[in-house]
Image (cartoon, rainbow, N blue to C red; front, side):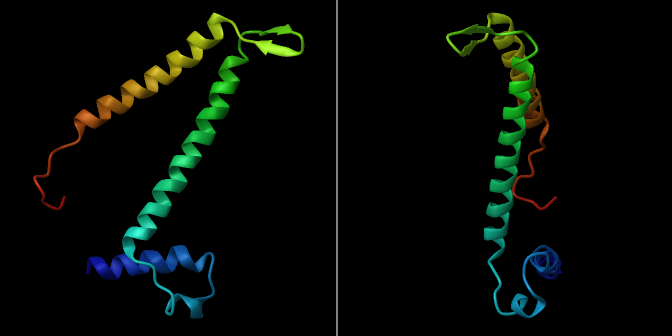
Length: 105
C-alpha cells in the first residue's frame, strides 16, 4: 500500500519533467527523491534568508566610505536578532517532536 502511494507520488513529480513513456523505464529509488527534495528545500531557505538579511541590513543606512558600504552595529543586531529568533523556534520545535521508539506514526 505504501509503495503504491510512493510510486503515485513519483508519477506526479516526474510527470512535470518527463514524458509519460519514460516514467515506466526510469524509476529512481525512493531515497533519491527524498534527498533531491531536501536539498532543494535547503537551497530555497538559504536564498530566502539571504534576501531577508539583506533587507534587514538596509533598514539602517550604511556609511559609504571609498565606494564601500559599511553597516553599523544596529544593522547587525537586527539581522542576528531575527536569525536568533528563527533558531530558537527551531530548537523549540525540535524538543516538541515525539519519540516514536521505531514505530510508524
